[in-house]
Amino acid sequence: MRSFRVLVLGLAGAASLSACATKGYVNRKVDQFVGYERVERQNADSAQARDIAALRTDLTSLRNDLQTMRNEFGARITAMEDQVKFALPVHFAFDDASVRAEDQAALQRFAQVANKYYNGAAITIEGFADPAGSTSYNRSLSQKRADSVKDFLVAQGLNDGLLKTVGMGESRQIRPGAARDDAGAELNRRVVFVIESPGVGSTTAAATTASVQQ
Image (cartoon, rainbow, N blue to C red; front, top):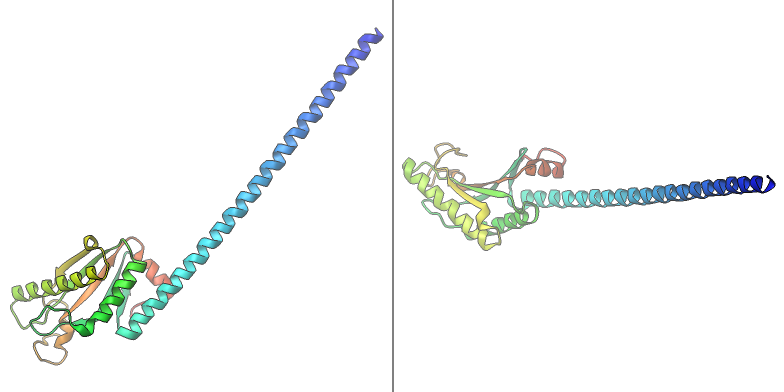
């Protein structure tokens, strides 16, 4: 009988020790899991902080470059939700589609900004003419102007496949009716760039922290 009681107590003790061991094991695993979770959360927070810092740096850089384009070249920049319009002072001689030497610096700067901040976005180059010729002639001439600018930008490293040209003819005149040697006629002989990509306008607007239209 005494042996039986010893056996029972022994089994009970073993069971108690086993339970304690199991509980200790579980507690260690829980502590490990909590530790891993804390480390993962800290890593995620650190990565998020780095991403935010990088984004702020990029936005600051974009804001500075856009401001430089305004100050140095008189660019007019308008941002909408999914597109940004760049109106550069790139003009053409009367009845001519050649890119002028004095306009090359502005186009080179535009190419740098487009490559750096809008890489992969589609860009439409709109060409315009003054109203001196017929509607069909002006449309053809404005198309040639857009094509000439496209060729220049491709030479600066922009992706040919992402550049589209369209001749707008004598539409949207800056100086209505001004043609040939009239005052302001040169403003009608121009190109406008439209960068299109989801969110691209929002990014540009965020970079300037205010309206980018001047």
